[in-house]
Length: 320
Image 1 (cartoon, rainbow, N blue to C red):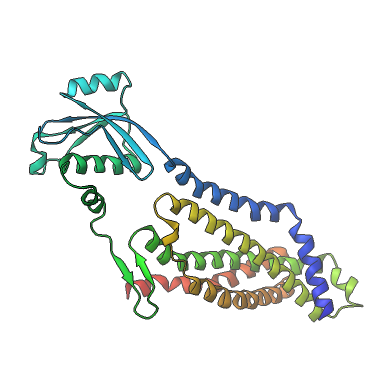
Image 2 (cartoon, one colour; image 1 turned 180 degrees about the vertical axis):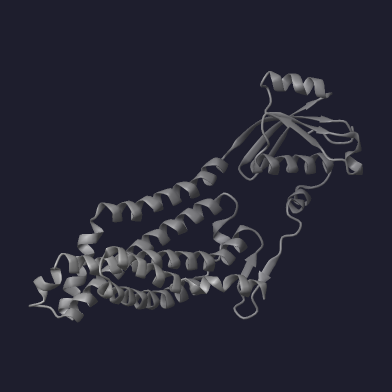
């Protein structure tokens, strides 16, 4: 057993220092964190460019400032569209909203600007319309109208509460994300395993150590070392992905209310690690049978497709 661990540690140390491993292991997390931080940075204390509006109904209250969470929007009322258009051409406003005479009867509003309002601007404009229509209503009414259909889901067996919104989406999507990460780990891991065994044969390393190690100890050490390498990579990716998700969600919800499904994560680890080791051993066996690295990669690809077989059942199960 000691010799197996020596081979595993030697393999792990040699591979973990390689440039390609460092690029793949650290490069992807950096991209994930940047992608997750962009929405957080864009929504943090954002003051949107001023927007004008023309009220043809004559029934809406005058509103000059609206704040929703960390978003703030200044509004400028105009008597007619010509005045609003002139202000837009002078770059005094980002755009202007025209509220038609028949708005109260269902006629839609029209926004004029250089580009379509993004989600943040759309949210604040909706808040402006609610405040202009219900100017005499208390603040809690406007806040309630912001999301009138918010539902809390309670699991009967565990009592866990989930509120509709980003938190519920996170809870439902996490098992699928874990499955995809395991699939990536499986595809990359079995390919590395087979080629590593073939490389040992081509470099005649087996003959060099056969006097002190038997074949079982050598293969077991290689499998264990490369498995630890893949699990290290997956751990780094998982931590970075979790951090990126937290950054992305922090702009749209209170993270204190986020329920992390630890049960799903524990089950994923408990079932994923032994399954990966099983496929790693099978890939090592195929590497022993393969004649060269190209053939080993082809056999590993077939084995990876077999490991991804549960994904083929996703569509039928959802349809059922």
